[in-house]
Length: 459
Ligand code: SIN
Image 1 (tube, rainbow, N blue to C red):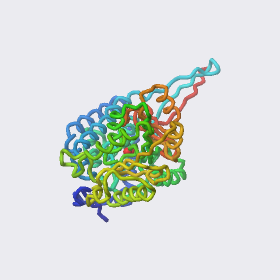
Image 2: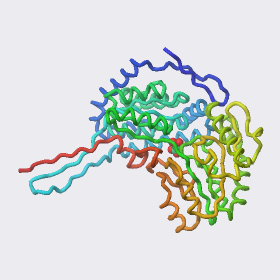
Image 3: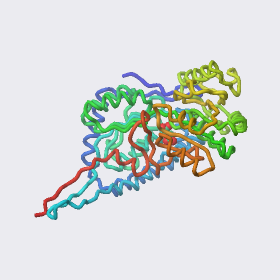
Image 4: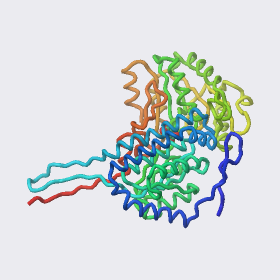
């Protein structure tokens, strides 16, 4: 059986070695989840809710242990990791409530001798594939609604960050959620994808990750017309209009752009600033960016941790070099940026144009490319000029301009004077190649439910 070495991206040290789950064991795990579904679906919603509340209490009680794991295996600064645990648990709390609200309805029939009743039923066994950038929150965002709906779930965490998932699943079992209703496997994305899409006992696949992998999973799942939810890549634009509060825009740009060292699907990838305020915005942004301390996430002053691995560092450097080639100007030298290992100092790039890679490809790293514009419609056109449609941000203090921009942006999540729009009570998800289905809010339980209706002849 081959082994998975989980490493600390800050130090390169191996934290723990795990066995990959064999093909037979994956099949057996799915089989057990299938059997468990037959009983879990009939556990009444109030009992499912109360088990979710118990899970939530245990996660809250283990907040720091979980945060430590997130920092160890993902590099996220510890305080930010604590924030992620809070964010993760907010999904459990929300869906503990929603478990009791999977309402059906009745519809007046077209003849007096009939009645139509609509009900919601759990979809079945869910196969979840989750990413390394939010090893706690992306798990609970899928597991909590699935369990609340009456589904059972098998999760395949990212191979970079499985330890947080393992602990979360252990806590769920400690809370009394049946072992086979919530389980995990250790596998590559490819192997898990194959099992989840080909095994007829898995009824739904939910995935958070790259658009490339998402497309493959959609194609594979289509063989069985399998229900899928896809939360895929982003290329978030951030527009700072001439009437924006510059200080607020800079503060929120930092919040959006440098969350998890820029490794977030909804991170601002590219910034468009109106030429009238560009100089002031760029100057303040550079000051704020250069003040961000980079280092090991366990150092309490650190705001930007390491990137997840060498490949991630190379991609960011490629975007920086491409920008330089096309006339971009760095706020600090390339030598200064490269700190060694997986660490990169954050940088602002000015004199940017729309042809640069950073304006077209998801960077997933701590660079902030800023392009100036004179005409708002052109900025909106550039913002929409992508196959992605996950998140977008804009800053203006004029309500008419704000509503105009909001109405014209083709994105599922939009922040207006707000660089941190995510919340358990809001429906997260993208348009176009950023995926489909929503996670969070009332919408987030729907993908785990089937709608069924009963037409009753009364006479
Ligand atoms: C993500 O990167 O996919 C998740 C970000 C969030 O939930 O805010």
